[in-house]
Image (cartoon, rainbow, N blue to C red; front, side, top):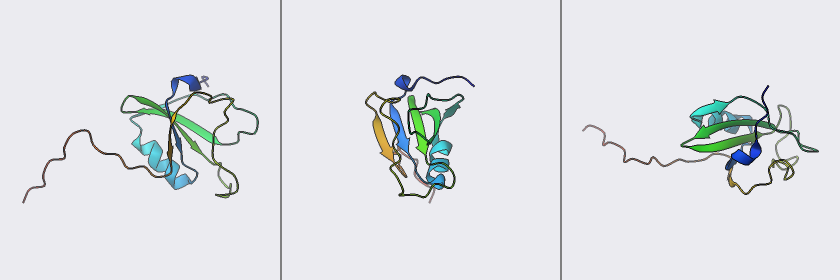
Length: 103
């Protein structure tokens, strides 16, 4: 599997619950194959993709890990660059006005 460069990603989406991660992954325009380097103590599941031109990392807890038992945050060693952090569910506003529903 190809190694992904975390320095190219500008958005980190922390989705500790599996249902949050699934929602985040479905919102991506494209999914990127490959793996990120792992830092000491990282046991999160990282998946990558892009959304609206932004490269996004979705980080979630491994299956069976109890929510709240530890923070879901990628290692600063692996992801040192400043990122936009999104936590949990996210609402997105369309860039174009929505068409009015027919009356």
